[in-house]
Image 1 (cartoon, rainbow over the protein chains, first blue to last red):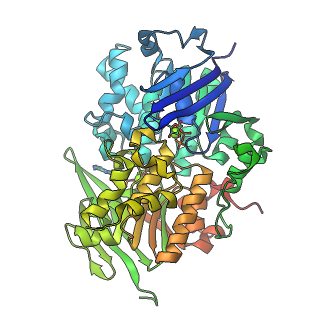
Image 2: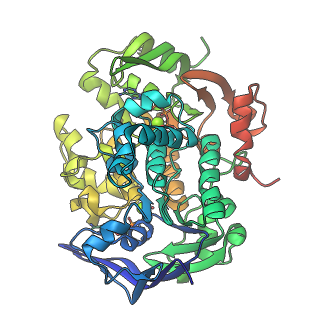
Image 3: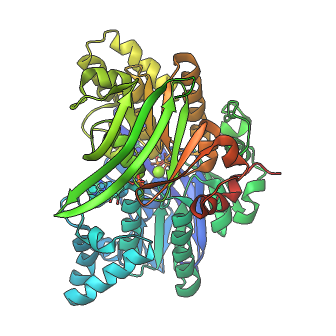
Length: 276
Length: 256
Ligand SMILES: Nc1ncnc2c1ncn2[C@@H]1O[C@H](COP(=O)(O)OP(=O)(O)OP(=O)(O)O)[C@@H](O)[C@H]1O
Ligand SMILES: Nc1ncnc2c1ncn2[C@@H]1O[C@H](COP(=O)(O)OP(=O)(O)OP(=O)(O)O)[C@@H](O)[C@H]1O
Ligand SMILES: [Mg+2]
Ligand SMILES: [Mg+2]
């Protein structure tokens, strides 16, 4: 049985300017694997991830024919049941790390909070676990970062702190929204190898949202390509760079390349048939 | 110095933060020069001081040593209105840099109001179109925008005052391939049309290669190696660290 099953998910916002359909009928199954979600800005990747956790603020609305996590009906779950799942069994690394960290609480205290309150471990054990989690994501100066406030971190350090925090409770499902977009390529490789090990050794399910097609092609098993709230293509990651769908191809063609010409990059033809 | 005057000159810049009594040496003795109408890239390890250099130029970081000159003149502290008309920065974090309770319209017209510039409506509409956003987004709030849409608002805001220098901190890392292409094309076009000078941070070597003539590789607060675009594209780096960045970017090479 799959870990997560989503059938005909819709997310809508009733705004003054009219109804925004952010997600329009998305269905997918996730096993203990690395599922990538790619697609252009505004295509509904983040809203799909947040909807799984039922973290859509009003006036946003979530509808689905079914949304099941490990046998539990997420659409029917009470708010209290959702709270028990969030963080502990389903974790999400948000696209906006600094926004998700508490700005007036030291990084170390934030990392230890869950361990202390949820798992009731001693301060010393929590401290050691927090330090180990920061070490794993290649933070230099771990002692300093434990004492730091979020605004004292670089963009990529904030991102790594978020990843460390989400991984401490050993979730069964991790939804990672652009988790490595602020990391240099060598640190990124280390962080990806941690995620990879969790999927391989612990059987965690991973939804990896990213607009970096080349990264997703290398790292994931399977990829959903989204456009305007819909999945337009589902493809094995190893085939992504040779995708047939004109939208996916269009996205690939837009990328600059080392040693390429410096002429204008091709754009997407939004009048093509697939765009309608 | 060379034939073209350096528009941005940084000499032995050091930045030291004091965080809870600890001294954090974020930048140590870094020097660089960016010629007029040139594009200069900063790449390197996360936490190595790239954003801090850009912030120091804007007067937003505690400089402990060194000099910063724009157009041959030492920058004034505080920077003042003339500086912001000449130099604008696009911050790494579009979530933090947009005011959550200001509409897109207010965000874009505020710099115009501060500098007493009229014709605001038309300028706001043009700015939105320039960054590829529908003009109907004008009255949205940041939380009603996706990550990439916010980043485009931040870029539009930096362009409102028609600055000569743009400091760009990961300007496209929150953008998908198609919007990245649109934004990079826009930046290239503006550079041609308005003679802009760029100092930009990116961890995507393909973006740096596409946009920049020279690039400085940083690690742990220090400059490791400066490379020309040709040296970058042909892998002629001297240091192990620069080489490791290049090696980890193999998927970004033009297929041979
Ligand atoms: N509160 C809201 N009110 C109205 N529209 C919204 C709201 N939140 C999101 N949207 C819209 O929903 C659409 C999908 O947004 P989402 O954040 O899922 O995009 P995304 O694929 O994650 O994009 P990005 O790559 O830029 O992060 C966007 O067009 C966005 O403008
Ligand atoms: N306000 C501050 N107080 C204390 N330390 C700070 C502050 N701002 C930045 N630092 C530290 O300075 C160092 C350099 O940070 P900076 O943001 O310049 O890195 P960066 O190269 O831009 O990294 P990234 O690629 O992750 O964005 C980091 O160790 C960071 O923790
Ligand atoms: Mg998003
Ligand atoms: Mg930075």
